[in-house]
Length: 633
Image (cartoon, rainbow, N blue to C red):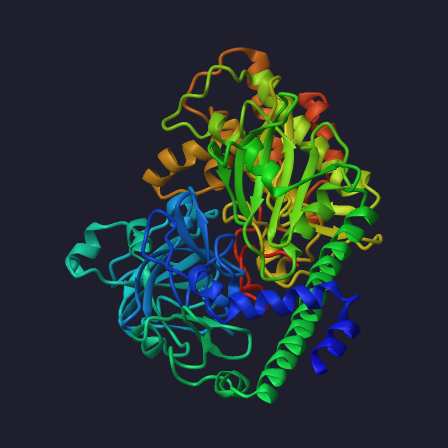
């Protein structure tokens, strides 16, 4: 009479009753984890199986911690806090795989600003790798070794270059006493490439060759040979087989209570069997409930945060709705360090830009970082957030769509011709709009916001060419009225990063760091930076000496003819403002409010500033600022 009493006692607990019969009739006969953990592919690249697993498509128990792969445009991507890497090949028999920095495929200047870090991961560099060492802003020109000139990373009259080598460089000409920064990027020599072949390649091609990593994870050989699928439950390695889960391989290493169940044949054993099922049912229901509560608590915590920052006023979308509005992520608009942007359309026909964030290892910190910044803004020159999606690891932001795309495509033409749709008046208005947007971020919000990544790629243009600042992935909130802030990592894009962000000896990091980036971007809008690469390189004269010499001799800074007096005044005004903005020391730069006044003022009142200090401190970069380049806190 044990069973009737037990069922009478458990009658109100429908979850447990259902679990008893479901577990008794299905679980012992088939194991759903076996089917879930079948090998998959992103479309391109190698087959993905244990210890790797694909986020959004597989459960985390199918792989080993830190081996998460994200599919982006059918490419397998391994993400680290500093960089995203394309997984080119995986050798499961040798426990090694080849990856390449995605920046080599996507960025205009794909040079690393920090060493790749795989600390606290199961990955180690292979001894077969070579090194491609990048030296930035060196006071002496490299000699005695074949080098690649890194033109896109030039700064003033200093040198930036790359050197490939197998062993450690011992040449005194390559030292941090003469260079602001040195970064090593490993690469693996292809069988078809030799030393002479490397000399014929450029540094981007070498970066695309990728490098070899070895991994350490529990061995899967015995499990797979027995017909199982390898996995990990958070505490130990498991072998998922068609019937059930084993500790090592199918048919061996059963958990003790399962063996007792199989052996039991008497009535008493049957009673024990059912009792065990009841206990398991209770535990599973309680465990599922705890897991659900944890997930809900995590999402609720994020939503409370979003509500406190005014973001829940925007609509919350389900991930299925995000897939529908983007037609299953068909039209890609662009890609950044934290995600991919797709074109979408709402049910009312309104076009939007959907930013799908990459899987985060920090419980939504990347998501929160961007939302915390953008949700505080409301300005004509800052892109508007319309909604968001938050479903566990699936996170997306829905922005207003900018039909003219980014400013970059209008000012980075090959050669010296400018897109005809942008007149000098257009360029001036765009420069003013960006300046007003930055002024708003620095002083118009309740909490000051430093953007840290002002560049043409992150300036979007609407149908009327009104500029809007976007991509707040590196932004930092600055509560209080402190003039400077503390940053743990160098952040930004090389060529636009202010000196103090990389080296504290230049001064404190503040809103003046955004001013510097704005000045570099303004030179690019005018078109001066394009000509520097063409003309100044031929005479070994570098920016900004080249600019000042041209101004002092009253010569045109650009080779395209600007004949109208008004256009020449506009050009000279914008150049003068940019030169003030890129002064070496933050205290010598204007605020964004002053920049607006300068852009709107009388040209005769604009004075060309003194030349920036070109020499850098002999002390190398502060150690904590050389570990990462694109980080948010």
